[in-house]
Each structure stands twice: as structure tokens, then as C-alpha cells.
Image (cartoon, rainbow, N blue to C red):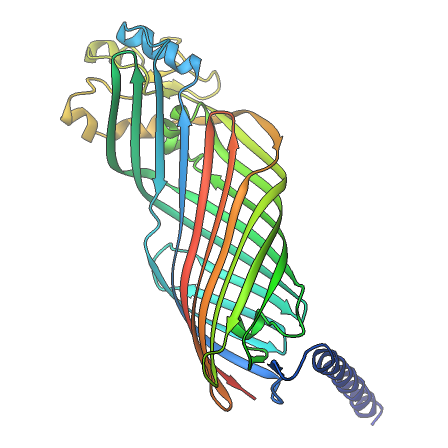
Length: 405
């Protein structure tokens, strides 16, 4: 009997606490909006099914530093001191389709999306919105091994460009955490949430200036031992981590052309006021900057000694290719069993004033106890460390069908 009474008391206290929180959320929301512009539905809960098409692709560019150019000059017997060699790499994550579910009470919600495409990643989001603010936490992780590489060589003799579609021997991993917050100056009449999580209904057209604050951190990791050629080409960089604090000022507008219809557009450029980039560098026991056409010479390298980190003939780096023009040798990947890389140090660089972009657009139709919408979003982030720069473009087009209860 004592246990039963205690359980009832705990349940009653939990129920009372939940009711108090609900009442405070409801009263605050009703009190802070102009009901001639924004309607607060009586049914506070929503369950939303969200199919989505999206792509997060990454571009990376780098220029050969003086040390690598000197090595190439020695290998080919050509003076490259006045030559600029750079390359652009695009990590081609496939266009993916995912299905997600979002559950929320008023402006509070949690969502999860699972990709239907292999290795294309997953989303996890937490969000809270009110009449004057919004805050969203997004976690993303994916890998890809399809690359497009563009090589640029510029010297006194002119410019040479080439493009190669390439599949890396090991995947590149991209991980990102994004915390996106905004403040609505005219929150009594304009609602960003009306267009994107439908916690309220926009009944009359209105717009507002927005103040945005966001925190973004990501990592690009291609430090697998089979990606040594990319590490060498990136001046020994194999991992890049970035932390960015951004501030932006933009504008959003809700257009209501007819009852139950809503069109939204929002654009907010942001500037990084805090930008910390850390790169991790690696050494590699092979080298693409030299080659050896003689198979007899290649045999003199012998076995790799992991403890001494040198080949049997005392050399630290072995040519990655024998006769680089031999198709038979290029197709022979037996050399990969001896590949080894190891960390050689790290560098941290603090910079500012990187310009990023956050833009959205959406269409919503409100039913009596249901709603349907389609919307899209584009985020662009950029960062740079010495000769290496990275840009990430994250965009999606998402449908939604939700019920209120």
C-alpha cells in the first residue's frame, strides 16, 4: 500500500509539473503574438513525416608549397620555382533521399532522418522556437569516396588545366555540428516557425528583420593510410577541424496570398567573428612526387621497417609508382600492403571574417488539423589554412505532412 501511494504521489507531481510547463508555454505564446496576424492552434502537439532530397558536398583546394615544388623539380629536372601548381577537389556525395519523423509540442521538437542511400549519412535535430526566437541543433556525419579533381598549372609558358574523376582508395569522412539561432524583431506579426515547423499559423502577410547567431564545427578527415597521395598533395595535411562563431543580419517575409496558404523566403549572410582552424599533418612512406622506371631499382627498397620508419635500403620514401606510364603497374595495388602514415604534428590558426550564407524558402498549406509543406535550405561554410581551403555546401528540398492533436 505504501508503494502504491508513493507511486500515485510521484505520478501526480509529474503530471502537475507537466501541466504547469504546458500552461506557461501556451500563455507566453498567446500573449506575445498579434492574433490578427498569427493564429495559435488549440491543439499543441504535432507529428510530421518528412521525406527529403539533400546533398552535402565539400570542395577543397590547395597549392603545392615550395618544398613539394622543389622535389618535383629535382625529379623531372625542370625548374618549377616560378610555376604555380594547384588543385581543386570535390567530394561527390550522392544526391540522397531520406525519410524522417519530427515530433513536437508548440515550439519544442525533436527530429531524426535516416538516409535511404548507402553511406550518405543521417540527421539528428533538436529545436525550440518562440514568437521572437528560434534555435536548432543539427548533427550530421557522412563519408564518400567519389572525387572530381581539377589540376591547374600556370607558368611563364602558359596555363594547363586537367580534370579527373577519381575514386579514393579509402573514404573521406565529413562530420558537422551546427547550432543555428535567430532573433525576430517583429515577432508579434511575423513567424519563422509558421513556415518550417507549423507551431503557429500565419494569417496575414508580414516580414521582419532577423538577427542570427550560429556556432558551426566540422571536420574533414582523409587521414587513412591509403589516402597518402592526397595528404602529400595537400602539403602533408590529412585532417582539418574548424570551429566557427557567426553573426548575421537578414530578412524574412511571409506572404499569405489566400486563406490557408503561406509562402516564405529568408536570406541571411553571416560573418565569422571567431574562426579557429586546426590541421593535423602526417608523414607517408611513399611519394608520388618521384618515380622510378627501373624495376630493378624498385626491388632494392626491400621491406618496410615500421620501427625505424624506413625501407631496407635506408630511404624514407618509396616511389608510389614504378613506370608511372605503365598501365600494368598502376593496376597492381599490391604496394598498398606496405603503406603507413603517422602524425608529424599539428597547426592551429585563428582568423576572422569568413563570409557564409544561410537561405530558406518554403510553401505551406494549412488544413483544419493537418498541414503540408515543401521547403528548401542552403548553407555555405568556408574556412582556410595557409595554402589549403575548404567549402561545404549543405542544401535540401524537404516535404512535410503533419497532424495536430
